[in-house]
Length: 440
Image (cartoon, rainbow, N blue to C red; front, side):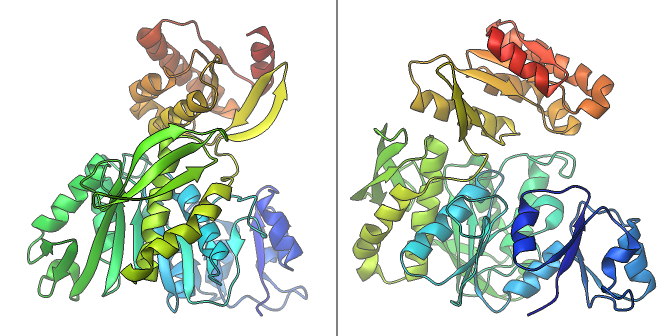
């Protein structure tokens, strides 16, 4: 194997698995971190995420001694180029869909490799599966164009939305980068996409309108246009709640586990009842993406009924991803859940999921805005999403920028009050949230 080292500003739980695997880890950035233990050897390569500035001391030193530096996207492209890559992308639901897909495939006997961007309690190594098979499931992030170097055999697009407002100017910019990503699908590959996502449907319409591009019967074909470079052929499979999709769910209802049951249909034919223990209609969509992808990988239509029967059990046993409606405790009869929802679409989805699981209980949302730019641009959307709750507590965005971010949080409170007229509180410290919850 390879000798692996790395550094971060603070320790995190993600580093524990790397440490156990034998990686040499450092807290803080320093020139000494990229030298061997004897101080004389340098690494063969340095891989840096988009969050690392170019004036970082380790980056500068690596450049000065001639060590090649790669962005994460290039490294992932090299890592996956010999695999049958299933790249799970989209504005929301990537982590849950990718981890659910990997879990189901593993349960069905696939010796796959998988890397997702969140901790998965049912993964032996937290966010990674190691296997010797040909399939590689990867969560593919659009941020800073990280997924543009990938060449997937199957590209999954869960939905499209105006996210990462610090990078993308508007929704059209989001569609533009996903169009570039879809150019990377391998010849003979597949695109699995949510047909109910309005922005995703608009993207499909753009694909059909591209010069030299034909779209018929779910197949995209381009043999001559320079727009896509080399000739590309791939098949499109859609899923959602609407019956015009290839795969869709009907008769969705809550179940005794607190999740959802639904009837799986293919082009108008009811095929099976699917049960999930994770709540929310967004997770019904995530499971449809998984089903469509698994059956696409199997390929043989004659085995579809048998395959659906095999994937029903692991779908029902999938417990979700950490910080995605994650129960962290109960106090005085109040269930406390943690969720990473940081976009209005995600906030609304998790609050609706909470309503589904606890239809007769008061719903209190404690919300910490995530980044100033997103809050300013999407303030009204956040207000509408948070109106799903009975009471809302809003904290400052970041304590160490409290003066600026407190103002933006007050903007949000004012907007919420204009929607449902319930008194809100702006709390500058996380400790004060606990005090407020006791009072509520």
